[in-house]
Length: 419
Image 1 (cartoon, rainbow, N blue to C red):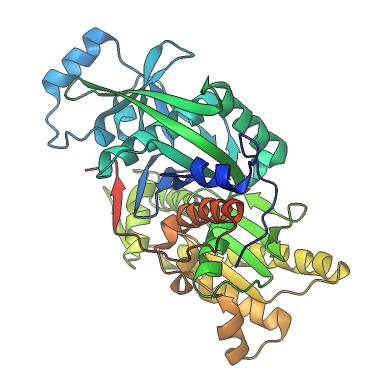
Image 2 (cartoon, rainbow, N blue to C red):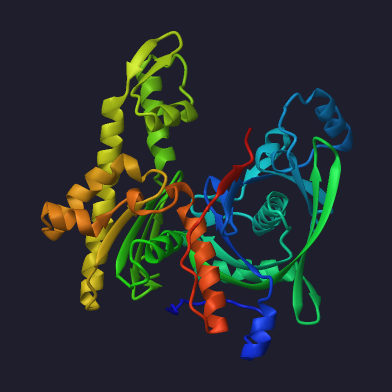
């Protein structure tokens, strides 16, 4: 089955079939999800991710001192990564290494790409790190990007233009040159990757692609995707395999907002003794625990706070869905599925499902069939988008080759930058 695709931005321009076949020899489709908290990459066999943060490098003297004092047993390049930034003529720390940076910067925040240079550095880092994990390094890739919704289509095209501007042209080839360093070992690397084509979609579309290739068995269903992540939750109606951009939305209220509000409430309830770190709360919530000790103030049960935050988030999701369903109805469009997915979806899935079922008037059997959650995904919800984006690039290649797309989803490893 050949799938229609929303706007893509390939380069060079499509060629005749024989030339196209030659052009895609040895090309690896790679999904790239520049997320609010982590940037994720998928080459079809593995998922790799690191924090969406880039930072200034230490001076040579300070870096040398850092190496002498470093006691970490993790000597991998991914954990100690620096990428050469040609626009600054200096190295930039990426991911875990930014903890030692004098000026770390989150380049994807509030649903918007804050800095194209940092995002490009992250792209280089991801392709380099993927190559380090593979038996054979990446030499030719087809990229599929997931962009924050609030960036908009214009910003997405501008980012692709920014990527193109950094590539070296050799005949009809576009080459990305990567210069990397393992700060812990001082080992340096140089790599060249041909970017055969690049296309862009909005975050949330990747999760839909995973459902399309698995649960939907390559059949097209109008699907309303709610993707609940760390920093944002996304609503993305997909009609006849295309995202309805006019109705798509990204709200800066994900798991981070829930833990932030609870942390503040505990701080006030405990007499402003010590503010509980949000990461501790996140770990407790993920483990199903609802009690936490505030030093000097005792143990507090925050179950009611979690419930209140989840109820509020569920109400907001339903409000958006009701408005969008009305707008879709005015266009003569009805929904087949509502998908509530993402790293934070499990917290609110049952609450959202109940509200959606009542809104549509679906009985329990109908609700179970038409409202799907993370359990419908064949991969971990935290990296479903990047896997789906890889499938999108794979599908684009099949379209240009006039071949059937490979629907296989087989992730054998997940690699990250932390110990």
